[in-house]
Amino acid sequence: MAADLFGPAHGPAGVEPLSAGTFLLHGFAEAQAPALLEALGHILAQSPLRHLITPGGQRMSVAMSNCGPLGWVSDRSGYRYQASDPETGQPWPPMPDVLRDLARSAATLAGFPDFAPDACLINRYAPGTRLSLHQDRDERDLSAPIVSVSLGLPAVFLFGGLTRSDPVRQLTLYHGDVLVWGGPDRLRFHGVKPLAEGIHSLLGAQRINLTFRRAA
Ligand SMILES: O=C(O)CCC(=O)C(=O)O
Ligand SMILES: [Fe+2]
Image (cartoon, rainbow, N blue to C red; front, side, top):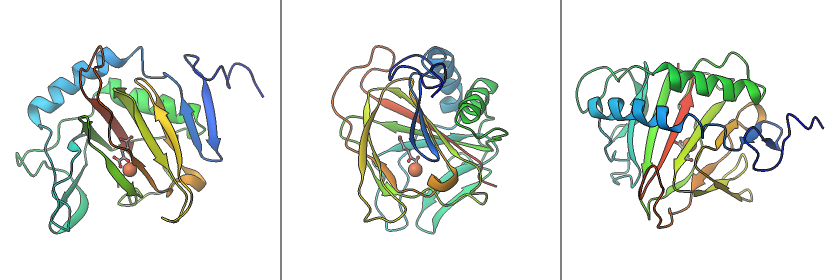
């Protein structure tokens, strides 16, 4: 095993393989976090975070927005990607280079070169917020991985198998961690346990997750 690639468990560029198509890049986004947060501030001023309604009529506890050509939305009629923000009627804010480049380099390190995300879903968790077990399957091209960047308070991520009833592994995602899953793991069930109380030095009492996808 190459020591430079599979570095120490929490080393700055440590790439931890979790299974055949899943890699945890410990702290990979940490140095860029201030630049990412500044870019996010501009995005969220145009397309604010909001609590979407599920097709079943429930208000999601995660607050969401998007940037890039396509954004993920949910309402009474279902889940889908669309080019405009239903709240403003305007296109989603463009995906800043600092976000796209980070996602591309994380994907490349995880063995998915040529990742060209066209959607970035922004998830905001306050203490108590959770995301129930689900698959990301609204994307047309399942050959592209999911690249998920964690910022702020740590979260316990639930990583299951290809069927809902498979055993679920729990892993803590810290500020700056990037999790990439694709290939044979692309349709694994996953979720987030209720966020614990806490105060993060950069983000305060919240966790922000950026999920980059190839949707179209
Ligand atoms: O917040 C996370 O770590 C996961 C988010 C997620 O699974 C999603 O947006 O589909
Ligand atoms: Fe997901």
